[in-house]
Image 1 (spheres, rainbow, N blue to C red):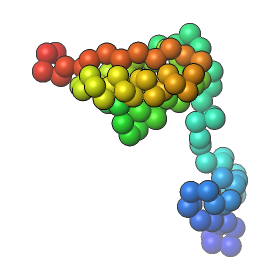
Image 2 (image 1 turned 45 degrees about the vertical axis):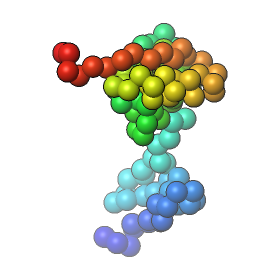
Image 3 (image 1 turned 60 degrees about the vertical axis):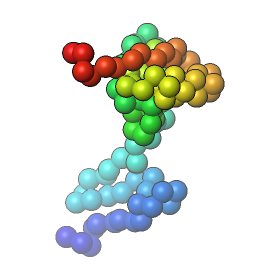
Length: 105
């Protein structure tokens, strides 16, 4: 079994992390990146928790690909700052902030 298993380091930036691998006779795709996101022009995305972390990176990637993105965040200050940072990159899609009040559902 191990004779046909080819693996490599998965450290960021390593050649092996993006190279095609073969496992049990099946070829696996390279590591997925934001470049694999198809064109999102004409789509609307609402991303919760978009002022930081995974939410921020998701909103940023979708806006770059043309989606009109609304950052739904609890903190107005942090949400507006995150929207401004994304907008400063001049993405293809529009970016807006909306206050998310979870106490008022």
